[in-house]
Length: 213
Image 1 (cartoon, rainbow, N blue to C red):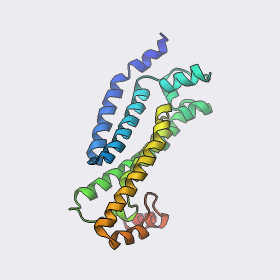
Image 2 (cartoon, one colour):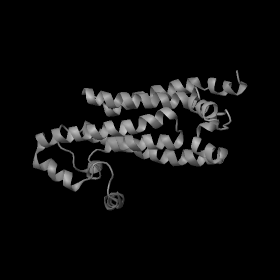
Image 3 (tube, rainbow, N blue to C red):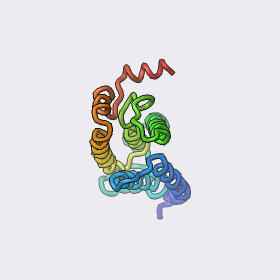
Image 4 (cartoon, helix red, strand yellow):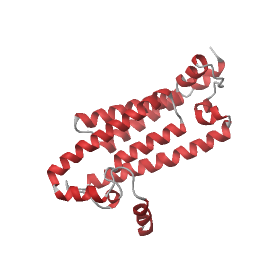
């Protein structure tokens, strides 16, 4: 066995801890109820496992790129920052890559938590203010940001494959939910649809929210 591989084996406990923590947060803040919710959550669970198993466990993507495609990559942990490694920026580039990805991840987590808080205390009333004045589906928008940030930070073959599937499933889920909300709230929700975008906020609304805070 390549002696450098022991670096990855020693990190497996971190993989287990991160998978457990991220999975708890996933099911706590998304609180899946219907089978469609569970489908989306299951895909995110697969994304989490694929991500951290490679980040701290088994470097499948690096093996594939080196053995199958013949790309010369060092078998060390920081090589998992593939964008930096493939562009030849090394460890310094990896730090920049991680910082950029972390911005998207933190922003996404804030959206998920803020959306959860509003729904938890909503008493089944239609939410149109706060974070819901910026986007109609802040939690799903947050998921997209977290997934994108992780792909910047630590891309793998499996997570790159899962990412568009996750986006497709949650866009479809959002549309199904909106059809149900129209049935429940009628013109009130239709007016809300006209005022507020689905996932991507308008810059003037974001700026207004920042100034108001």
